[in-house]
Image (tube, rainbow, N blue to C red):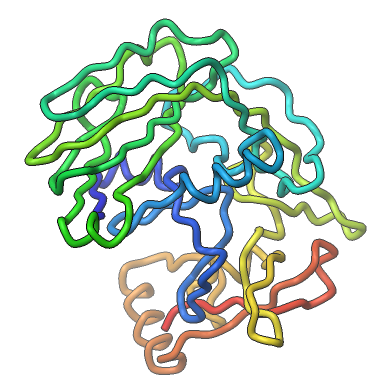
Amino acid sequence: MMVGFDPERAELIRANLINHVAENPAPRRRRALWASGFVLAGVLAGAGASAGAFAATGAFTEMPAQPAGQPVPDYSDAVAAPPGVIPGAPIISLLGEPITRPIETSTEISLEERPDAATHARVTISATVSGTLDWGTDPEGNNPSSSWSADEISRHPGVTWYDFPLDDSVDTLYLTPSDFTGIVTVQYVAHVPTRLGVNADGQTFGVTGSTEGEPDLVSVVGIAPDGTAVEGYALATQLNATSPDHEGLPSTPEEALQWQEETAEKYPDGWTIPVYASDGITQIGAFSIGG
């Protein structure tokens, strides 16, 4: 299933579409375990892992606050992250009964009559016939565009979902199919923010995109010494570095090209950075970037 966005819109919501990667780590790809993540062109997954979390705990814990530029829900005050929830990730609970509709032609679903506590509308798309679907809450049509091939649907369920933030400006879900047939389910949810953790050295740790800002130590899935996946934290400065030799972003296009060429020559297979426990000292694995 391929996903496309207007570039400006994509930058605003790229932290909110989820691509679960914990069970099959790719050793040479930048893979922070955001509370949610975004792939501009790739597979969107989500319902399975999140549903399992709900069955075990009674609350979803996958989606973070949205970045600036999207509707901003009326959040409650942040609370301490309970056991099993990464600091900074919200606790997500179901509200009311889901709404289900078939999708064969352009469809609008009202979001006006919703629970007072709802901060997001969780929209799940189940594809049954290959095609493309534009879906979202922007009346101007600048919404996600997702495509499913017949082969993809035959090999695994064509299901993806996204939590659309709600405020007074959002009242309708717009779905525009093109050679596409499927089912949409709308489930209202409430996001309760959690606070970032703070270790003994004063470093914050947790997910990126939290309502408290960006942590010093970012939650990632790395590789333990025995080759298994391990959840821990990477330094944001190392995770966001252009290369091991250059922290931060280049200041000019010329510098960007120079850094790119240097990195390609020195690190053709990418590089690794340490994965720590939340103390920021104890190394428990490694996280691979690039390659």
